[in-house]
Length: 130
Image 1 (cartoon, one colour):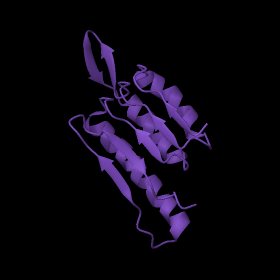
Image 2 (cartoon, rainbow, N blue to C red):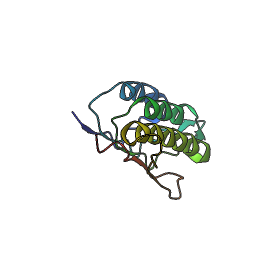
Image 3 (tube, rainbow, N blue to C red):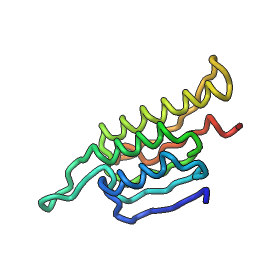
Image 4 (cartoon, helix red, strand yellow):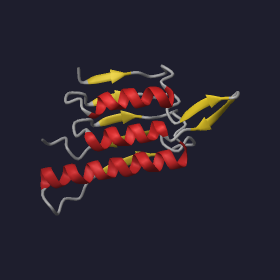
């Protein structure tokens, strides 16, 4: 299995911990769509509250997984801090991958597209030439 779509499954922050724990060690998954899962927030007392747990799980998986090339995080209420954390992990992973593939002077590529919800998708493309 190389592509999985879990779009709109109400994974939320707690579920993200378990899901991205598995993604971190998966060696075949290259595309993952987890859009619309409220990963960056928890619903408490009739209100959405930011949760750092979801973005932390995503960031950990991105740092550990060097085969994932497409990750859709749109509509997940990551917030500014969560989006920054995920972006830093993507940048670190792309930089490391580019150094392995192209050598120490590599210029990694990174595309982060943002929308009103801070991050609509993060994609890593530096390792596609393996």
